Length: 218
Image (cartoon, rainbow, N blue to C red; front, side, top):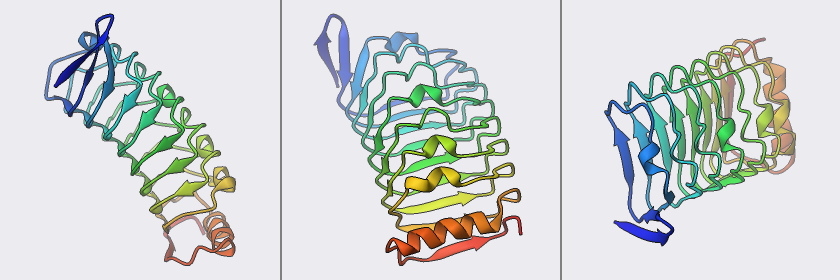
């Protein structure tokens, strides 16, 4: 359902799905300010820009951006401050920047950044302090560090860092005090001792869950 919000702006009370289109942009949504459900952007092979979403500030559900082969950045989501559900960014082959997410301070449920081969950093997540569900960063071939997650203090579910072929450091997690699980595996450039040091610090702070550290650089 569409709800007018004045001056041509409008909200959507349910989900919005943009899928399997030939769209190159989403300019037609330039007056959208909020979504009551999920925003799903997936399988859009011609999409090269999210221009048109500049007025979107809140998503009560989740944001899922998946299988958009030629999307280079998330520019257009610069005013987004709240995601109350999941944030899934995966299988976007040319996605090189998520800087547009710099307004986010918390994610209500899971954060999953997976199989984005052009993504070299997580710049844009510097203000993120909490993730309500799990945090998974996996199979991002060019990702060298997670420095942008330096403000993160709490992960309600498991922390999973897996199969990032270029990742060399976990130093950004210095402020992290709470996790629900811990898996760091198959990151060939990441020193095992770095993963173990983080696990030991979390255990010293009271974490008593399962720790999996395997297949990293020895």
